[in-house]
Length: 310
Ligand code: BDR
Ligand code: CA
Image (cartoon, rainbow, N blue to C red; front, side, top):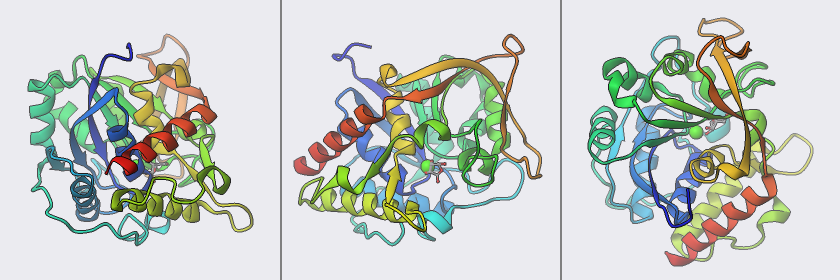
């Protein structure tokens, strides 16, 4: 992709602190155009994450379709990440309740935008329930679509010792998509954890003094506190922003083609990824390394531009 090309993307998200930062990054990058946004239960329940998306869209002055998605995973029990993102999905960070855009259903937004608006890339920042439902109900719609997903882990998890949150929350959904027509680009936990901001990277009013800039700063600081180890320095892993960047900057990650599968049963292995031998099935592009310093720089510069322009 040359710098002159603008790639339209669809965002499927469960905001969520790092989701909000990822949406902001997508808005800030001139090479991406956010076409529409759908929500999925994940970090918090569907009402909370949809309200967070609506509030943030209003604050950022976004006029795009918003679709409310799945409240429950395809199978298994629902979980959330309230212990990390708070019951409200934003750890109490205040986002003004401006005039919010009305919501449609995620299914209707996805169908309309993928079918008729030329969107060929979905950046998925949460459990994959909405996309898997589409794959089951209208499989041909995913032909020629690339799904860039933040999720999964082959080297230790963050919700159990073996599973990453988005994979754990709806393992059946990833399994369904691995058998679908969509091309998958996976940005896993072991890579996004290497892209972490620390206090020294951030400084005073990093995104300017506008309401949007100050809200983004509050979200980033809340993420740092959420991730602060019992003893030691606060940090914020840029999980979801990494997936947004992966939709436009292939050079920021090193990929391997892997055949993967996921444990879909309700057991201690729920959501665990494993790698199968090459040639045993369809491959995904699986990120194995990130250029962390460059990603952090693009992230900070982008959000600063967005905040200062608001
Ligand atoms: C992923 O899980 C969620 O809590 C974050 O928003 C991110 O999408 C990291 O494991
Ligand atoms: Ca997320």
